[in-house]
Amino acid sequence: MVTPCNDIQGMSMIATKQDPAVTVRFPKQILDAATRSARENGRSRNSEIVTRLAASLKIKPKKK
Image (cartoon, rainbow, N blue to C red; front, side, top):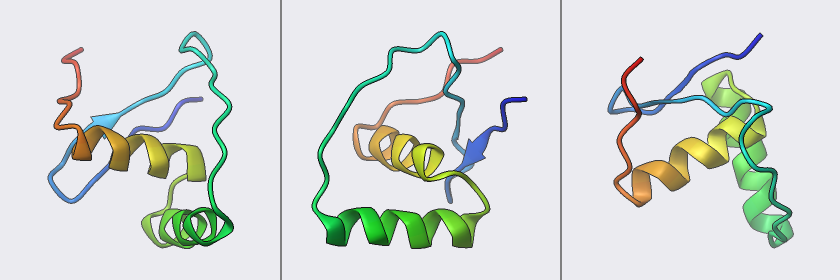
């Protein structure tokens, strides 16, 4: 089951198994902060990173 992740502006970004997988190296401090934030927001670390990256790039979610 895929769960949408919403940021403070109501953006919903859903990553599925069909989306490309990418390996990225993060400094431990950033990864720890993303993990904490994901827990606080009730989403996975991946969803937290995708949502924040999309928001910073001003990418709007696709309509279903």
